[in-house]
Amino acid sequence: MTCVGYRYAHPCGDESPAVFEDCVYRDRALYVPGERTLVLADVHLGRDRASNVQLPLGERRDLLSRLEALLERFEPREVVVAGDLLHSFDHLPPTVERSLGAFERLIDERDARLVATRGNHDTMLESVFEAVVPECAVGDLLVCHGHERPSRAAGYLVGHVHPAIGIEGRKHPCYLRGPATGAGGELLVLPAFTRLAGGVDVARVGSFRSPLLGNPDAYRPIVSDDEGDETLEFPPLGEFRSLL
Image (cartoon, rainbow, N blue to C red; front, side, top):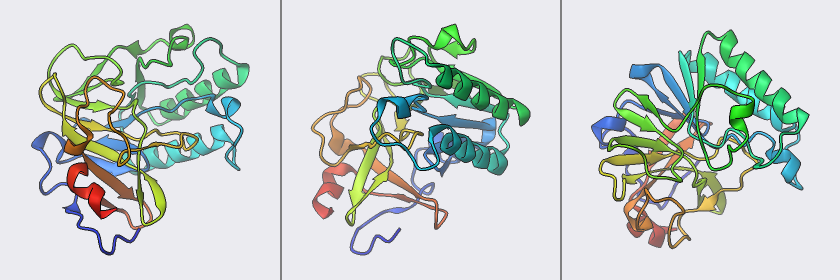
């Protein structure tokens, strides 16, 4: 990804808060090395059945192939989903149960454990999956979905927002880093892991649909350029928006 003409800061890490400094950004996911934990958000299994547009490879194959690549690269001992593992609120088609089973088996075959925090879409999840929790501690970080306030102050890893940003005519899924409003600490918002989610352009919104995020101007977009295997952290949106 080229960024000619834009003032981005640096590859992430040099100036990030200590709570996030060792995290590795890759393919809409985040790896926490000290805890050997891979964090995903907004997998939305079954999203293809609610969409008029399907990925050429199909939802299940796309999600599993990308998850497998992440498992091979990082060899985590735990995979934590920051909410919305499922998409449907009120029913579970057989295809979704099969996809969830394949998702679990792939992680289990790599000797890792799958944990899911409850998202607003996960009303049916506990009927088919046992390891569902409101939030999950990953070292000093707290993983939760972000649609409700967490139980304690921490550094947060959340989903829910589906952030993306348009740069040079192309929309990129992005991470957001900034203050946790009303909760103390810093937070990092992950993009939706499913590629069927178009993403909310963070440079164009007036507010975020999460009680943990305040004025959009305070948050830095972070874009993982997987082709170049680098991560670019841009200025806060209040400064960066005028450069787009």
